[in-house]
Length: 375
Length: 192
Image 1: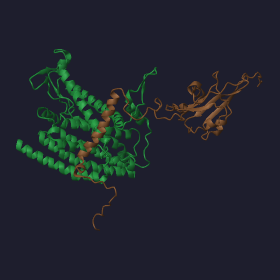
Image 2 (image 1 turned 90 degrees about the vertical axis):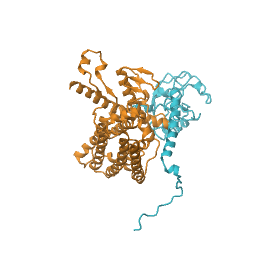
Image 3 (image 1 turned 180 degrees about the vertical axis):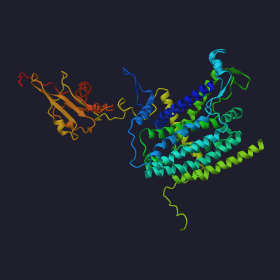
Image 4 (image 1 turned 30 degrees about the horizontal axis):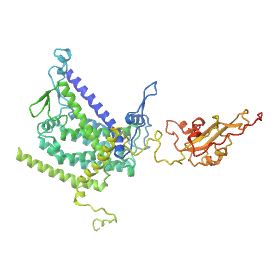
């Protein structure tokens, strides 16, 4: 009981720090990467001054995220004259909490046996015993179903935000967001079913282990990878799918009437969602926390050569591998965002219903047939 | 009601082949263009060179500034280091942006130039860099040089060009405009 509490408390603290920290870093990456892609320098003026000295730490503009957050927190909480008080205040939470919740089932490391970190016979080793935990907040059997169910709740926050603001721009943005997210959720679900058929499980950790045994999902299911990535970027409402927020027509879409940290929650949840989408892509298609040839006892190369590693080193290596993969996929998403122009709304719907959905269905049929013959 | 209206034809209607219509390959092409630029610039940054076309504004003077660029004012000096300005207020009168403020001071020991500015300030948040002050000056006391004022800061105080900042000019550094000859010394000293 007590070891369980301790381990899961540590997991939750780590995951919250991981999500928020990486989301903040991605705001910096977005600024800097877009700048470098466009022959610019990028934001580099915010600094931390070491107290009582004139030493200013700039660190390539890394502190602009902190400056943004402080600005959001200290701004006046302006609200429209007529609005639905309850829904208006609920909406940012409904938009941001599901994004955080989805990560609960994502494994960010393999099995960990904390008792093996300590000297055998010491008090800490006695406390943890021989038990091992999966590095996952909630080791659910129904992992992928949980992901789909919870990410669907995010639509409610968007719709409520637009409706309760009592503003036509917000309403339009919310209507667009709702139809877009529902359309792309269908394609995403179908793409994921093909993945489930391939792996033969809905448990995310088992999927990672399957990929370690056989091959990475991107090699087995390349079409599902593309479909899932496209649909998730559309779910996240970022360019090229940012119709709900498009600044040029709808001011800021469904969160036009939000100010201060309420708007900050919408913006932050967008960046947290980049991290979550990257984590899902990594888990489903890029081998999750595993490295090639990395086994729980160390590196086992195909020639028979082995490089023994301690349990602690393996755990740290797995966590770092996961973080690095998530970072790279997130940078790729930001690259897409700064490369592609936006869709027109009818093109968006055409792409969703007439291209992605049939492709996902076809992919599912082909996968099912192949699976039938190879099973 | 005859169904959908006829689609409007534009003169620059893009002609897409099957390859472009498949979209995914064009995405890959676009990503490789932006990614190529990214990695090329990143390699420059990593190897200690500058991977951007833009300039750091106040720290770096752009290489393509004209030698005649009128970016910042300087107050010229006499050989003894005193300011050449006699606080006649003609530049402030000529200024179309009303951004020059001069407060005069008197030095009775200097018979040739008893009047000088105690305070000479240019509000760079208003200045339009027209150069009229330079043309209006009868004493060649104000000139404009190539570099730019150091404007960015955290309050509006930095937007004021003060006298000590404006007196950074050294006559030897400006060979195209000769330094005015030293005035004849006068013996007469007027009492205030």
